Length: 97
Ligand code: SF4
Image 1 (cartoon, rainbow, N blue to C red):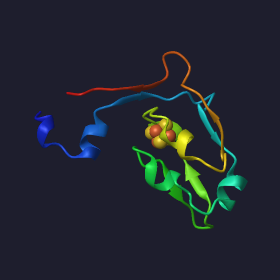
Image 2 (cartoon, rainbow, N blue to C red):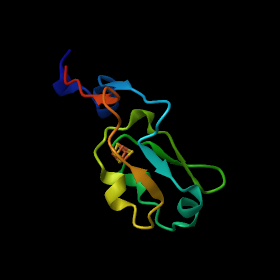
Image 3 (cartoon, helix red, strand yellow):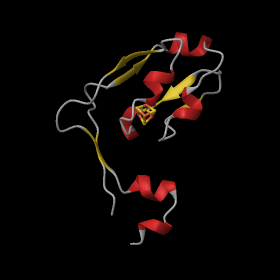
Image 4 (cartoon, helix red, strand yellow):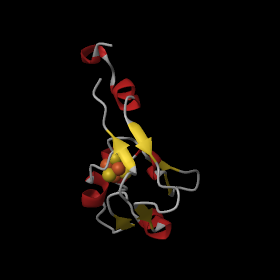
């Protein structure tokens, strides 16, 4: 495997995730997100986890989160009502080949 020639989706697929199904580490208030005009989360998430749903609201799944914290910083309307690191043993394990 030559990681110098790999594209971003391939590199991200090397990571391992142990998803905490009982306690999400990021929680949104979808009513706030629906009212947010700029929706910066759609463009700043390095894992592309924020999507626009059919009604113009935000669809989000924390399962592939890279724990970078960018969405927390950029969420100016405070639609992210909880952002913490995952509990011990959960979350991303970075693998660089
Ligand atoms: S912490 Fe980073 S990877 Fe995780 S959802 Fe926010 S922007 Fe995306």
